[in-house]
Length: 565
Image (cartoon, rainbow, N blue to C red; front, side):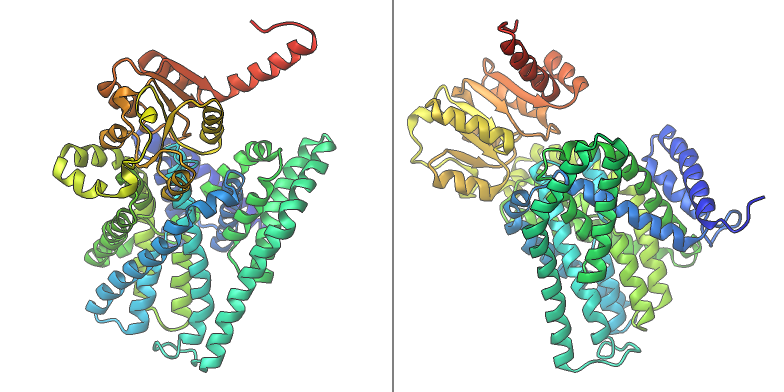
């Protein structure tokens, strides 16, 4: 007979119910995470029946966040992060300010004080890391420019919330809380110490982590033990995340992300990402279950109007604010919609802020209940909201005046300079994407003196290319206006080198409208997608794994003095 096994009870109930309800949700054409959230509600303290240890569930969910962020770091280099800093840093800070102001204004209208209103607005301003990453992964946008911007945006939000959590206890007295306020010197001292710790952590990871972690991973791999290799990955993610929080005061998520980003320097990073995937997926489920456990369904009955107002701020207010900011920075509509919809939810930091606000006497329990309700509902409908990105984009582009207004055709980076050599405008290659693959293609074309024009969504990269004399246009290649800027009608070849294949068919269709005889070359990592593309649109599709195998076979045959067929 079992006695006092809360961990096993929590895991058994969480995974079991999540599996059943997740399966039912998928059969009903709903996202699986809706089932996971319902599983959490059923085993939470606010519903009758099985009740598990909420504290244990929360800690298991934190492990899920660590592993997930570690996995993202394995696919995200420091250069990728720096390339989006000009949009991610000011954009995230402004979006936090706007969302906080909207939330605080609504709370003030309800009669709440300054401290409660500020805490409420801050809790509604920051998105959930887990939900954002799963949405980007589900739509194949994680490694795209849009995905990089969203992740960079999220990291800035993370750092901002770390500072807020440190400063709030010192400001609580001034804002009407129960904690006595500190002197100016104490406040500035706390801010200085926090910034110093964050800077020290990042410096340590960049200086030592980039050398130590790849070497450690290689030494473990040399043992030939799969168990040790997997253990190395998990221990790196969890241990470094814990040390980052305990020693430097940064969040678990940020610590795990930097650990993964340093591991990426190793040639074994892809293997590490592959072997950690099952653990990441399993513990991510526990995150959604833990969110459901926090939710009290009675708040929907007792305060329906206020819940709707909270959802309006999260889904409409934050989305419109982020969209306007990204468009104002000159990025295309697809970037604005992708990033904005991925931010249209709240999660882990919102719970932490709400709990701290209640403990400091700043936020009423009513506010915490509304924040939890907003989190659960926004998380549940975010995948459905994300699915509207393409229809909205198509609808806007079908309205030419609205499209011209939002796509900013007067942007100097959205059109080729008048000084471009004529040879680039006839028989040229149009190269979509200038990342790791596109850069190699571009360099080879330049060496062979083959004219080409680049389409790239990263504006900073377009500016650098133009400085070097390479013709480049900033924008979304599926947009007819952007493609026409490359003189696609006179082009000989369209090469799509970006990993984001979300609008690939539309891109090829648009190119052929301008130039029916153009040859198209695309890349993909999916055999099913490669087959569909070859049947439907592209003349030549390069499947990553196939090309790697062909290269290795060619080398082997050369060693035996044979030619590949």
